[in-house]
Length: 109
Image (cartoon, rainbow, N blue to C red; front, side, top):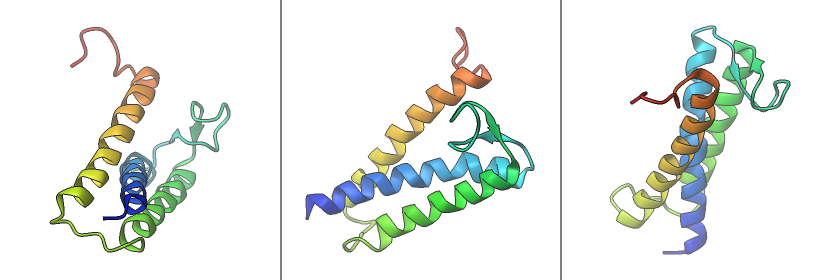
């Protein structure tokens, strides 16, 4: 397999997992952090901005996973690259948003 495809699948996973909190918060009508807030990534953006940002992330994930190479969910290499992107971005955002919302507090599971 082409290693450039694996990199695309990794970043596709990162975009895919990043779409989730923005879309969910936006659809629920709640403000949430986004790159467009002041201060950037810390301040809150409107629910509409979050739906748009989440949709952009979803489209980016689609383009990286489905339109680059021939992604095969049954391929361990392809799935591992996608899953690793999801895991890494998930941990990064959990730590970032946990700091802002109390999820990194001592004793929090």
